Length: 198
Length: 198
Image (cartoon, rainbow over all chains, first blue to last red; front, side, top):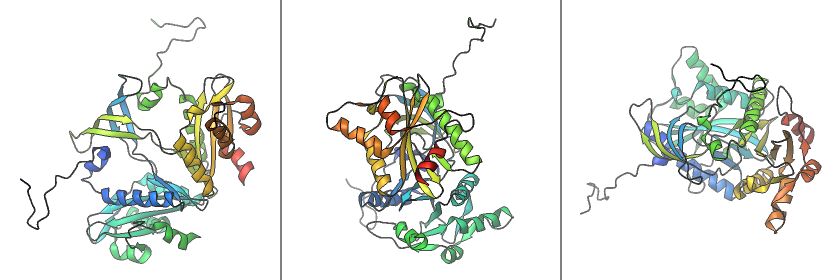
């Protein structure tokens, strides 16, 4: 017997994506944005627009079993905090670097989504002439914004000086750029970067 | 009682770096080159010369335990083949991308050290105006060479067409550039890149 939701939709057990174990920790936060960006980056790659990849999740490996040379099994490992941002690559020769985060809050974006060493990394990227930004998604409304690193720093500094620990949605709308969701690519951030930097 | 080697050096059990589990598979091959490059990249970062990081080893996570929210333990995972090169970053605004490998062979460098999708990745990087190369180390003599991707492709294509499956050391010396080992930085590849591209 199939179980249905009151709206007629069949009930589906949500498949736990164990390959993305980290996401489980944070209650699946970020999952959809990551998938959208992976699709977008695949589109950019195949259509030779840009080469952008997500870095693998950093893992501290403690114990490995070698039953056969061809199939080493990691038996104990831990998630490490990333020391850089998650995405980087090349667009028209220039270095592109960004972090992507989403929030369930409808009114503001919590700055605890970023780590201090990620902010330091973004500063270094800017110093060396790279392009650095964050992609922020409000999951309740599915709105996506691009905020340049230089603007993120302003809000980060406000927090460091004792100010609010988030960026209001109004501030993001004012200083950032809304990216309308598309079909292919889903989140066309390169189009915006092209307008801003090239 | 301390055990000493005949030369008077105390005997030390070589610490197994379990955090670099992958290296164990290949009999520690690549360990020293990776360490040298990590030191070099740290030097570049601290001295604000360039921002280059090694990507984390890609791991396919199958099973995660959550005893507490703060300490998720990965109980089963496998090493995945990387889809890109290991190192990338920014130098003077440009995108830099490379792979580093070493061989125990004294006379030639086996091309099986590279995967086809890594070659494809390097081609895409070049297409988009990035700088792409490989750093090759002959571990018996500790000689390090930088070979530009465009030259690597020539030898790769020779193999694909049925030719030899390695690059002779003479060819590497002719088409590549020797990087003398230094103290700080240990492998000053940026100096060479600066001469070649800027």
